[in-house]
Length: 125
Image (tube, rainbow, N blue to C red; front, side):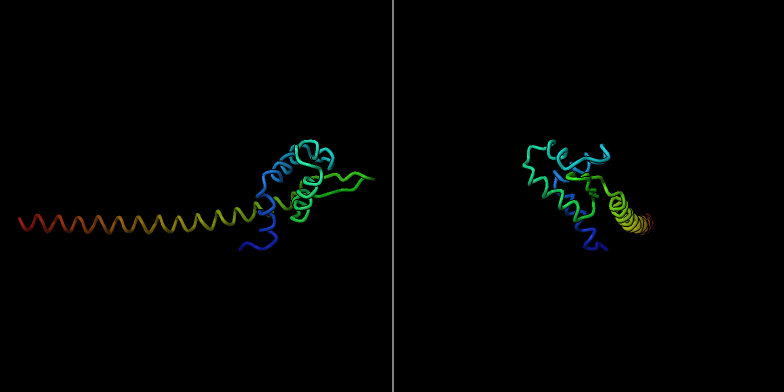
């Protein structure tokens, strides 16, 4: 169902700063670590730690260019998350469809029982 890799991905995105970094990278395409740090009030070591978590979860890719680290979103990780979400959506839709069928059957049974009760009342009169 939910493997450790996917759990790491969702755990990484549980933090609002990391989600914001992903959103910034998605909008910009690529940003250096320095550019990312400039957009936050947090210290550079704190942002560096967030980037480390995102790298470990494979949500971002990093390219080294001399002294710069250039970050971008890893689309494969997002595709993996989307596939899992779609799997869960299908799973729950199937369950809800089955519940809907069961409830409709129960309503029919209840209506038949009420109809039989009404017939008995009329016959008793």
